Image (tube, rainbow, N blue to C red; front, side, top):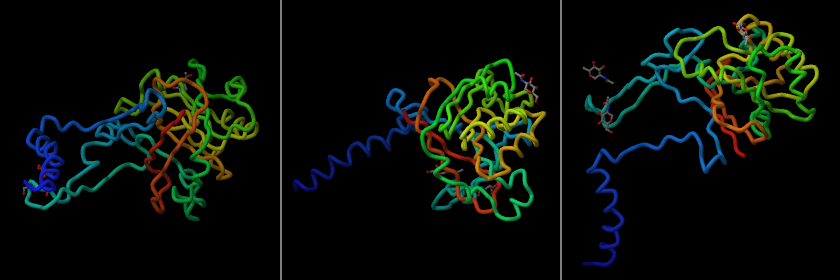
Length: 253
Ligand SMILES: *[C@@H]1O[C@H](CO)[C@@H](O)[C@H](O)[C@H]1NC(C)=O
Ligand SMILES: *[C@@H]1O[C@H](CO)[C@@H](O)[C@H](O)[C@H]1NC(C)=O
Ligand SMILES: *[C@@H]1O[C@H](CO)[C@@H](O)[C@H](O)[C@H]1NC(C)=O
């Protein structure tokens, strides 16, 4: 046999074996890479992903096949339909300010330099919402620009429940104001769908978004990661006109 052909067959052999055995086709799904060098802190989007506008998650039709091979198409081709604020997502200033929305302060206008860089993962006392007093007690040094707040929400695994639970922990208005007045934090991350506690939903969001300097990343997956300093990478879609959208975030040690 021609040696070149032989080489080609050797190359193809594993592929042929795989395709004949579908049971071996198991997609990898990682949360942690290289023993904790990299953490994916994004929640997987499924039909049960929670959102504030539903008690039953985002539902099955978040992905719908527009063309399907089973129906004779040459390909599968899906359409995505998602609440902009579902799962791990980012808020743009237009989320709580009509004038910012009208002026186009959408997710496409968010600063990638804020969304990427050194970040502190910190544990918040579990028996309280995030007040000014709590913020003060955390002693976050000046110069820290990105903080991911891990709260009781993580212990309660709220993001794993499809039902929207209004008893989650978040910032009270005075906590948000304290952060703004006394720290250099420009990226605020939290482990449920809203950085603001439910009773302070509007007021705390408005404090954070007012100057359009602070970016809010919500619904982070912070289980089983040591508190401390990492490099965070968060990348939103360039969804023109959207005041929020799913975001992919990871931490690198
Ligand atoms: C495939 O065909 C069935 C039967 O006509 C139809 O109900 C279904 O919506 C089609 N699905 C797609 C993805 O085209
Ligand atoms: C999608 O594509 C696969 C082949 O890759 C096919 O087996 C499957 O039936 C398709 N799904 C649908 C709903 O058509
Ligand atoms: C936080 O505030 C919400 C209401 O906004 C409340 O339901 C919840 O019990 C509070 N959590 C704690 C730990 O105080």
